[in-house]
Amino acid sequence: MADTGTRRRLGALAGAGISAAALPGITLNGDGTDAVLAVMLAGLAIGVLTQLIHIGPSAPVPAPALLVFGAAGFVQDSLIWWLLSWLGDETGTMRVEGIGTILLAGLITRVSILALSLVGASPATAD
Image 1 (tube, helix red, strand yellow):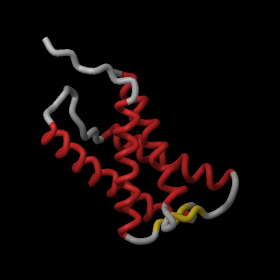
Image 2 (cartoon, one colour; image 1 turned 135 degrees about the vertical axis):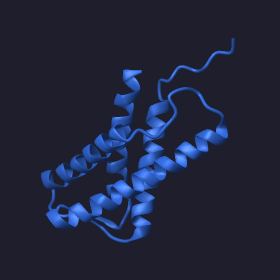
Image 3 (cartoon, one colour; image 1 turned 30 degrees about the vertical axis):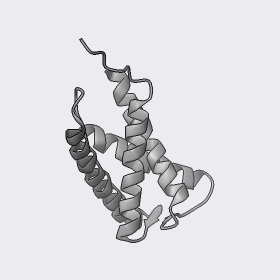
Image 4 (cartoon, rainbow, N blue to C red; image 1 turned 180 degrees about the vertical axis):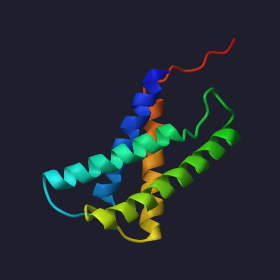
């Protein structure tokens, strides 16, 4: 089960990188190493906060419950991106423009966390 936490953190880092690269509303101030550092810090913040406030099942659950966990995780990731947009404006490292960008970044981050959490997971066996 410890491997799941590592995959979740990698999913958070991947989600931050994909969001920063794909969304036009996220601009990184600086270039080269500064931009990479800003993305890594965003991924680290998302990874730490999603580990501290873990939203998700600890055992296999039916589809309706999984949808509720997914929606709650999406809200959590969107709130983290909102926090990152405020902190980025304060520090001058990253700028996130608009609520639509924040919501899309939260969705991309949650999908990447769920996708990497499922990689290598053993399928449940029926007794």
